[in-house]
Length: 195
Figure (cartoon, rainbow, N blue to C red):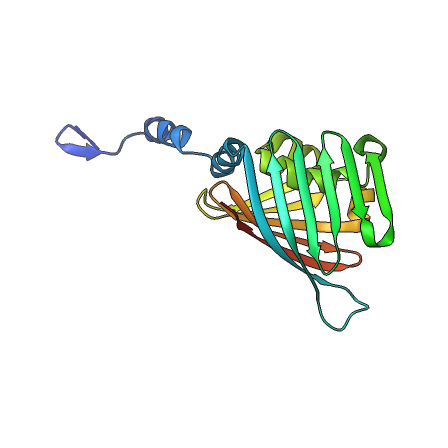
């Protein structure tokens, strides 16, 4: 407050705003901080346990395996139990293998508009690519850069017919949990970083 004619006069509102604005401009954007930390991780390996709640089953179906990410765009999910399965995305190519069933499929993500948003939910997050995430999803962030949560809702009606929402949680630059709610049930994958 300024002294004016022997009495205190509060500063004008514009002056207060001028004092506060530089502080607000310097406040870090937590989602940008998380994306920067994720982008800094060029390669990571993790083990996972995934529980799928399917309407036709009395209890969750549990699978275990390995995950790997290598920037800029290679994502691999290798299920070891209960049956071997490979889900691999490299660039715009998706490969799915189920050896016990004799299945090996390869397709271009450009020809699968209903799948690409689901792939990019994981891959763009791991790459710290917020622009791509927002191209395919409505993105809601909560938490802090140390412990964060992203809620993704696919923008595509076709993708949303399969998966209504995806919740990603992590700490610092590591995504530790992926939960999806889809038309065929719910799944929750918990990852543990490997050395």
